[in-house]
Image (tube, rainbow, N blue to C red; front, side):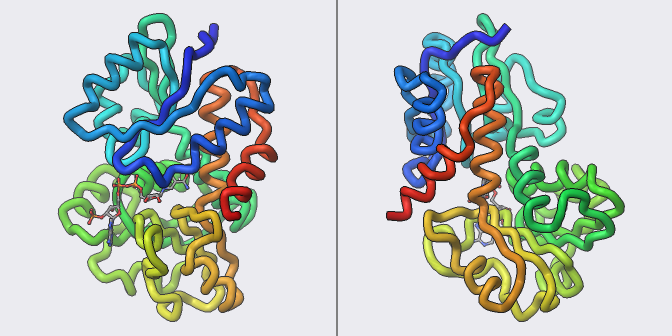
Length: 272
Ligand code: NAP
């Protein structure tokens, strides 16, 4: 049976940029749960143990963002099969005295990507930029798509090597242009473009009909996504992934579907 949390929290470092508090406040209000707060807490690596003790003590639920997703995996008592495959936790809650963890980024990515390339992706050549926690969720989701290949490039070669060892169906390349040159779908799973208008890869290196999915989100979209659309490509930023991973988390915490329309309005309202 689901145990209603006493409060909600997102932990990360940095965390101030996160739109999850705004998004979940809207969902909580719509569900008649406005007495519950969803707060953001900046937590340094050395503070993670003490915040987890507080979560247990106060029976909190919530989300984890960079850079704690992999460390939280070590601290949960019960881990979903999916989170085990990703080796990262982005959603947690208490069940009695047991701290449970799941990964809803996989479902969030799957939803956002299928909005872009169609409900049943098949035979796609996919290029992935980045090999961190979000990239792992991408790799797990794509593994269940029919006959699609996944080529990954990462800035640090050590992390790329580990990623390819972990996901043996992934092809690692050392030149970014080799990853994207014949791709049907190019995914950015790095923070490039979050703080400025940088592109994770120049668009003229991609085939003219390649779709672009940026996991980074901003109230007014990223420059890479806007420029991809200007060059007649299908393109989306990470906002649909954000809403869907949040909606699946909400279901874990309360056992009911949140109002995704209210979540969307709350996020788009933040552009003004
Ligand atoms: P992470 O585990 O810290 O991984 C970051 C990845 O980005 C690593 O592969 C890192 O490469 C690479 N990177 C960082 N800075 C770079 C740079 N300047 N140039 C090239 N590569 C760089 O973070 P994460 O959890 O995977 O998150 C990555 C991004 O995904 C976040 O910034 C966030 O915007 C987005 N995200 C969005 C959603 C959503 O719901 N829309 C969900 C999760 C994540 P190295 O190995 O070389 O350091």
